Image (tube, rainbow, N blue to C red; front, side):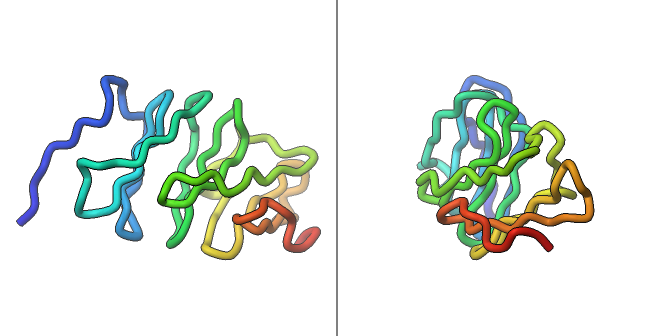
Length: 131
């Protein structure tokens, strides 16, 4: 069996997710990325503001904050991209309106809920104009 207590920072944990052999934990000022089972050596990303959403995929994850918008990171802590489009409202995004995969990030357009915007998570560039 495996049992362990993990303390990341002195700050409260805002959210976390476990998947794809990674544990991602964020506080108001940091994102901690652990590759399982070695949870005691996290990669730490300093954040400019508290994230409101975390969505994981096999090779990357997206953090959303009102201050910084949508940010895509690799599990080694590299900032890959910050997809954006006119009318994007990060404060309105949820796990129902944003999804990520190794080769695409999808966001439902806040101004027209009939449109899904697709982006390359590595570059942040649109894959197609809309669906």
